[in-house]
Amino acid sequence: MVLLADVGGVGGVVGTLSSIAVPPDVINDIVTILTSESSSLADGMFAPVNEAWFGARPSGTNLAAHTHKAHEKMTNSILEAVASLQQTGDAMKQWDREITAVDADSGAATATLLHRTQLAVDGMDDDRNTPPLGSDE
Image (tube, rainbow, N blue to C red; front, side):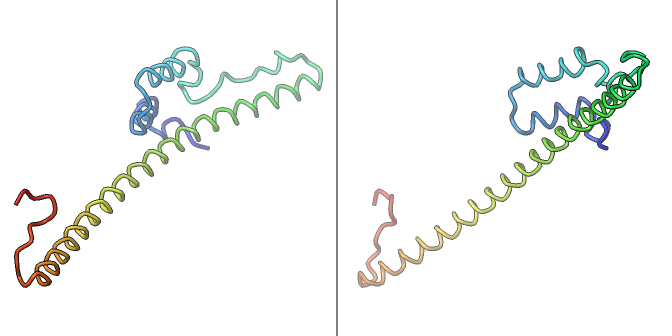
């Protein structure tokens, strides 16, 4: 089970959402929900289930057990969602680094190709210097 501490607490949630460019007002709304309206989630768990809430009959005990299981699943799902957002943010950062590197490599390859083309054109013009594309010469 993933704990809130595993994802850096509420600060980790804010950092993750910021890194994937979630608007600040949306982040503030999410933090407000996590810290005020769901105070039991701030500790990483729902309030414990009291079997007496569902009555003394066996069906009440069964319902309490299933409610407890549902609380555990919900808590884990929320924390897994935060962890997934962090992984998505990390993947987006990696993608950005790779795209930037490919762009730089493509730019260098294009410059080399243009230089070789220019040399070939100059050679066909009996060594007359043809101005590079885009120059005002």
